[in-house]
Image (cartoon, rainbow, N blue to C red; front, side, top):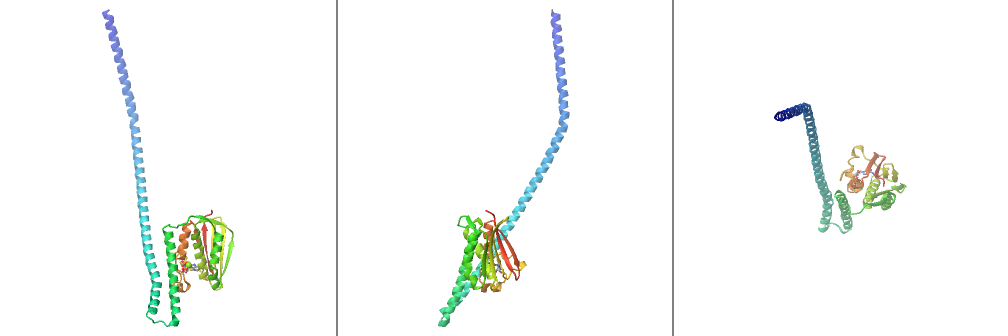
Length: 305
Ligand SMILES: Nc1ncnc2c1ncn2[C@@H]1O[C@H](COP(=O)(O)OP(=O)(O)O)[C@@H](O)[C@H]1O
Ligand SMILES: [Mg+2]
């Protein structure tokens, strides 16, 4: 009996030891396998992480460069705006001072009794003309600053370009008549979404120039039509034309091709700046075609409704 117990204990111990041995052996073998598999996997992961880090650093560098470039661009834009503002202020001061000096001069001579009775009316006429210039100038400056600050009061609405052009032409008919200039309105009733007052000013300034820079007994044609690029109003004249080197500059504030004639012809030098800002306000494009001595056509292409 004792022997049987002893044999079974010995057998159980032997089988358990064998099983444990087999388990340990198997575990070790599996670990070795896992370890052997882990080494290349780790290298792979390490290489991938390194590549990823390199790519992320490159992206960060690109973003940083882009930000620096944008910052420099913004700074330049601000500097340009500051410079333009300073130039504008200097020009405005100059333009205001000239008529004010004349007015003050005429008034002083009258005040000192130096003008004969029969000349008083002529002097008063000069004062009147200069004040009219000032009123026009201040009016244009106010329109421009409204556009500058996006402070246009009116709501956008549907505007018939043909009707607006007809209204502008009837306003300018007598001025045109004095120079023997004939107006023609052609085209169709196309509409744009915009601010009536600004669209009116755009067409008014173009027509006003087309009369002023025309020849005696010349022609002005206003054409309104729809095209694949948008709805267009174009103003053509048979006038003096614009030198090619000045075409880009005529939209700058106070820029005039012929400064010495400007006073006789009249105008503030701000008309086309108002046209430029007014067109930009409506996302419209401006096209200038001009030939010296032959004439000019300026077209405003509004986005189609
Ligand atoms: N239709 C045109 N033909 C010839 N020159 C023009 C025409 N329109 C504008 N210009 C030139 O562009 C300049 C700027 O025009 P604008 O801003 O309207 O100012 P202003 O008419 O008061 O001088 C004018 O002085 C003129 O030299
Ligand atoms: Mg003008």
